[in-house]
Amino acid sequence: NPAGYLSVYGNTYLAATEGNVGIGTTVPVQKLQVEGGAYITSNVGIGTSTPARLLQLSTTGSAQLMLTDSDATADLKHWYASSTDGNLSFGTADDRLVTWSEKVRIKNDGNVGIGTTNPNKGRLVIEEANKPFETNDQANLLIYSTDAQAIGVGGTLGLGGVDSAGTRATFAVIRGGE
Image (cartoon, rainbow, N blue to C red; front, side, top):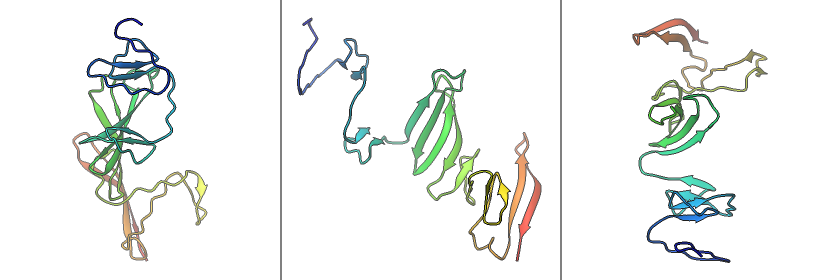
């Protein structure tokens, strides 16, 4: 064997103090590089030595999972999922992984925000589109509340937007009642 290479058959323990280890490659570029498939029969931890699930990512601050489509067009390749302070968010990143744009946040209290990082009021419920509901309505988006204010005593649904100056404008308000 050339100097610096190790050939092993069977089970082996390797304690390397420096350099990189390659399985299926003679030029590993990371501490551990595996070329080809891997068969893992137990839980895998990244950032933890005691994974509780099939795959567990753990870090201080913000745990993130990146999904990358290398064939996508410019700045449309990367989606991420992130868990921070008990909240789960999904978003995109530019090709340089410098500009991150959160798209959806699920807070640990159950509130869901689309286009906001602080959904602090109400819940968002989207049911399967174009399916008949108990009232035989067909809707693409169903919004309802189990809040006592909305059941039998009223509640409101406002539709509106925000202009380029950040001013909120209401287009319509639907008020419920007894």
